[in-house]
Image: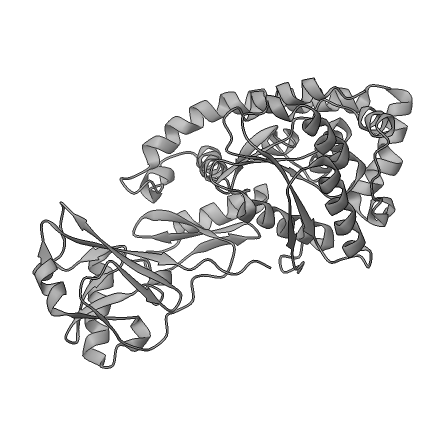
Length: 437
């Protein structure tokens, strides 16, 4: 049966210095048992214990499940957060994959800086993942299955139960008279994972009783090999990065194809972004590196987008790009904060070069590209964007500071030399956070 002390030990080994431990609480048996076990040892945790319930809105009883989670957390004295997500299969990955993507986006957005999201995946879940990825032609990355800990959003994700069996969680839940919800989707064999759970794993276990545990151990061994490989890839990744931290196309092009694909995959992992499938990654990297200088290649998938600009690779979120700012003009006299549509302009005094404070005090105009009124002003803005290295996909979304009808600075990127001063005003742009689903 599950031992709460062992669960706490494993969690602390994976994430010893988290600002908060948040259990992803679906209301099912596994997450209910995990939350209960951690509550019993909560004084051992160095940070608060909370829970998060994500409602996909895919089942008519979803609201009742959320209420069950709320009652459980009230009984256990654990704060519960609730997030409703919209599930859209825009990436052709099926309802199961789309729900997973929406769920993990909600997890990422909810985490506080330095926080840890705790998931209840166990040994059988790990075995299912390994089998699924083997059937999809996965390599070392795929067959490593689910890592016990990885970056997520502003914190990390931890799975302290990967060595625990489903039977041990069931025994724990029954011994403590816990109640849980049973999602009918977990019996729908149209889903690949459910088919493996109900048809394949029982047959394997009948012949090899420790099949799930052995596959989980095999995945752990592959993770160790992958960690060793990562040490070598990190050296390549460090060598490929320029001053801005982005991989250089020229360096990657000098590597063998297999090695460059591995370096890009490692870059995505370090950034906390789930890489695309292997074949898509390989074809996409080839396009990014080999497209002509006049092209704007990109590799887009459900979890992110890579674009090339000035010999560097840029990683962008999978969500829609920042919208272009609206027409309009705003007066700016060097004030610390200026709230604009879509975000906030912030100015700080800097010992380095920035906007001349005396010029700012006399008054400048702030606008977006859509607010430039003359063709001459738009041409000057284009030259300034190019001089400051503003990527094309951000040029309409970043505020411009103008002296008369001349754009002289781009928030977050720099200022034209003729209006520079040292010390000066460093102008930053803080885009507004999109509303959660």
